[in-house]
Length: 436
Image 1 (cartoon, rainbow, N blue to C red):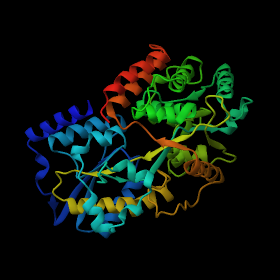
Image 2: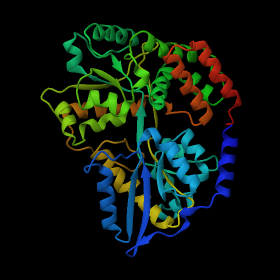
Image 3: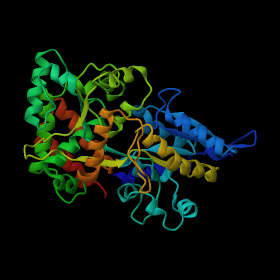
Image 4: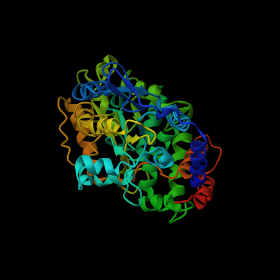
């Protein structure tokens, strides 16, 4: 199914007059366009502006036009622009199904990397990140701009204690705490379940806790989704909605900026689901966030729980968060790669060590975050430790049709339209038709 989709896209491109072929210059400068949903534009203090400004000062012959597109519309927006020939020179894409599906819009970066960084350039990146942006022949179609870990939950420890609760360590404790919170008119564990990627992140951590091998073997078609561990993970997922762990109408609430703001900027809810990238709550200059996280005695925990009752906390999943790709139709590829080089080096240093937008994707990068509060340092250490010793495998599902099928099943489970057994059957039928 995925191959047929790629063929159709290829034919469309062949039949389309590509308008992005004209060189772009102004006042003697080469103009390149960079489009992404992340790093995001959340105001004049956004780190991406500092990176671009610094790059342009060091490269006065290049001007970068930055185009921000919200995440909820990003992939389809980019697909249309690239097909029409109006796509940017450099763009960000997520790993997994989106990265693979966009292959015909991704320049092979291997020769650029070899020329710029030498024959052993692969040593520059962590193997876990490089594997996600390479094909079976070792060609590289994107550069990983930082790594993220998914499956985490966050708690306002002080708020939980107001209700006589502590941060839960297992699912039974979580259910009891959520019952107490509801009885007191407070939201339980909040999730932005309108966003399919958030649902997939949380479910994969649950499923990996039930049986990591069963999860990834099913994704790769080596085993069936109709297995006891996978069905158990679907049962837990559905019970989170039906048993009151997740908030009412969670399926209609997005993570950004609804649920996230309730925790980060309002400080009005005790728990929510979000990944390692939420560490930027400790670094953004937003006044409302600072009033929540810098107030005297602020105490927040990033945490994982034991979902299936085996006594072991769930693992996280990991992937490069943003992959930088070059448009094959770009007429300024040298300038484009110069900017990509800057983004993964000086840019990533700033994004990680000053803003904590990501964790490092480079093997040669030293993690040295300065100026963190004691609360922030505590949570950074938790994320680092889990990144070293508690990663189940890749974040997300790289096969587009299969990923969509799982996300659809998770939504139907959340709304009670299907049973866990039916969900496993639905996904398995798509899995059998998936080309790997």
